[in-house]
Amino acid sequence: TNGIAQILTFENSALGGAEATTTSNFNDANLTNSTLSRGAGLTASGNGGRFNATSWSTSGSVSTTDYMEFTITPNAGFQFSITSIVMNFQRSGTGPKAFAIRSSLDGYSADLATQTIADVTSNQTLTFTFAHTSGCATAITYRFYGYNAESTGGSGGIGDAAGDDLIVNGSVVACGGGGSFTVTFDGNTSDGGSTSNQTASSSTALTCLLYTSPSPRDV
Image (cartoon, rainbow, N blue to C red; front, side, top):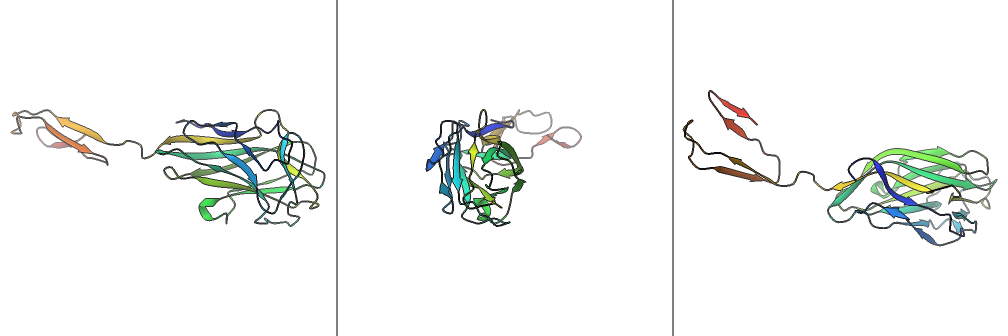
């Protein structure tokens, strides 16, 4: 995709809740399938229609083991950019009330975006807006850290909404852009130049001079 679009989605309506992992239902043709999983601090918990867990941190800040994560992996020769990630989340009456998203690019040290969750049990749509671009064929893992739960027994999970439950918006493009090119100049003798055509090739930026009377001009 060259414009901004959905490049990866998860849809969890068929889940029982306690599955160890679940797989993306859609990915851009130049991304590999992705898997959603839990951090070591969470406990899988049954709840139909969402990827669910208990044991969320009751602290007012991130606990480094209490997260759900997925990885975006571009195919060889491609890279991706992200503009936002949309997550549909539902909690029990004592589940987490805040989320932060972090990435493997900096070892999960800094928040890319945060969201506060209302103290209700209905489904909530959380939009994390940030700009991120991968390197060529470079995978990046994103983690959703849930915290400020009212009880370690409180549950919460991604899902329980109509349609896709986790949506990555952005673009996927070929690496480098541009590539190699060739420029050919018509040979003539009116300006004292060569009578044969001249060719220049480059895989990087190239400045060409068109020699005309009375002085050279950039083209």
